[in-house]
Amino acid sequence: MQKTLNIAIVGLGVIGGSFAYGLKQQSDYPVHIMGIDHDAATLKRALDAGAIDEGEIVNNLILKKADIVLLTLYPSGVVDFVETHREEFKEGAILTDTTGIKGDIVDEVLPILPKGVDFIFGHPMAGKESKGFAFADADSFKDANYLLTPVESNKEENLDFITDLLKSLSFKRVRRVEPQIHDEMIAYVSQLCHVIAVSLINSDKTGRDTADFIGDSYRELTRIAKINGELWSELFLYNKDELLGAMDNFEQQFQRMRTTIENEDESGLISLFEESTARRIDLEKSDSKLSNER
Amino acid sequence: MQKTLNIAIVGLGVIGGSFAYGLKQQSDYPVHIMGIDHDAATLKRALDAGAIDEGEIVNNLILKKADIVLLTLYPSGVVDFVETHREEFKEGAILTDTTGIKGDIVDEVLPILPKGVDFIFGHPMAGKESKGFAFADADSFKDANYLLTPVESNKEENLDFITDLLKSLSFKRVRRVEPQIHDEMIAYVSQLCHVIAVSLINSDKTGRDTADFIGDSYRELTRIAKINGELWSELFLYNKDELLGAMDNFEQQFQRMRTTIENEDESGLISLFEESTARRIDLEKSDSKLSNER
Image 1 (cartoon, rainbow over the protein chains, first blue to last red):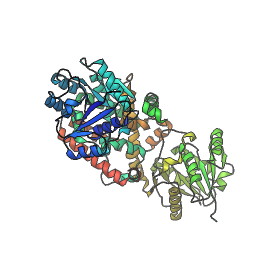
Image 2 (cartoon, rainbow over the protein chains, first blue to last red):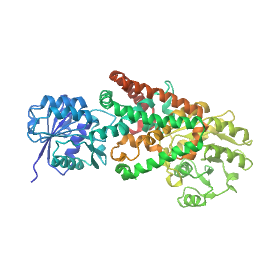
Image 3 (tube, helix red, strand yellow):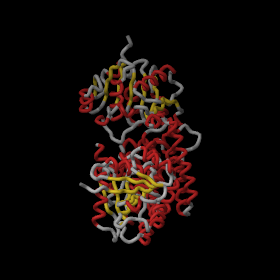
Image 4 (cartoon, one colour):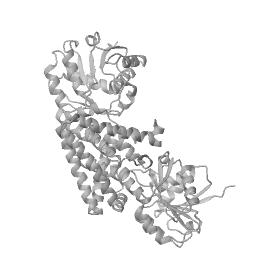
């Protein structure tokens, strides 16, 4: 019989809660799910929902039992948690996080990591614009991408194990990538999108009945303008240089389009549209989630 | 018994085709649907699918029977069609269009409109990134907004009639607005969104495995980067001044965010996020389509 995996989830917000539900629903591994959250009401809710089997407000018994510790906290929270609890992890435990930036977190966590503990840095490409356990839902992981940023100290068997565990949660592609490449890509595919959504909705003139005029494009482009400001300001500032670089590239294309419109250059516009259409079609071919939708 | 409405749809692309299906599916009005399309294969397909009852490549008998003529053509196509067929419309016919800009179309169509024909200018806020009859689907109209831009010559009973007919197709809000206001709003809620999507995807560095990194934000923000370039270059240039104005407003917010990030002004960033979150929550409260999703 397969040994039960003791998994501690630290932070039962929308991401931690979704992992809790997903781990309970998968059938590849027998699991015992433990939650640590500073909010007693959240722990009770997660227990009542069957998302966790036990919970603690501050660690007492959980970390010493945990084979896996999943840290679903803000970037600064991950560093603080490792520092505070470095003597409390089980020998051989695998720690892993879900924070949206990697370079600086890796640099801050590795020096304070106790011996005998392996930290696999990770990032699920599945977020929600709403925060809190109430919005947790394992379905958002289905066919989503997952990024791991291995470091030299990681054991290959632990990387493989976490990869298999993530696939049991229906993540589709679990890709390994250098922390710096991760941060550059995330600056573009995620952070820049949030900058755009926020700028777009904030650029509406006030007092207009905008809702009567919109279609799905505007609905989609502003969905992520509803944003957890405390979390995202941290993510932006941890990744400042990469984000500013992605913003520069966007700005250049935006200005290129502006000039084309100003000059009433119809064939120039059509070229830009042909380029974007070809890029989007390529994306749909390569993206497993979009491929499955077809 | 209610008299059968003879409706001509001119241009069986994705929008014209969706109207054809929708009109066939609704049960408020007995209808006879006639299609005019330059492509014989499209007409056959629409006939075989039961979307239309008869079709012609060039008008022969259809327009003289049509109580309503729905022009689902490019902006320039609408003007050309009215000009070419001005002697062929039935006395008392209602013409209506679905083009994405209004001011210039109104100004070009009204002087060439024959007596005894009423042109109700309209615009469904429901598009698709794919073109052609094959992608026609009346479901995309469900709970969508519709804009009418009445002109002085319109008969009130015709405006009401078109409004009721649109509601039978499950459009939710049919709003009347000045052509100029329409164009300003559309520059912001639709055209600017397309500029952003195109600029975003075109700003990706080539040779990266972007698909492995993306989440739903990037999927959503680039959906409309797959774009019918001939149509949208026309729409952009017809609405040049309004679009450039909307681009300026966006640019200003984008730069405001840039400065805040450069200065590592965390509380400034949080303020911008609070503003965007409040605006998006307001939008969700006012938007019937988003309200229904909850």
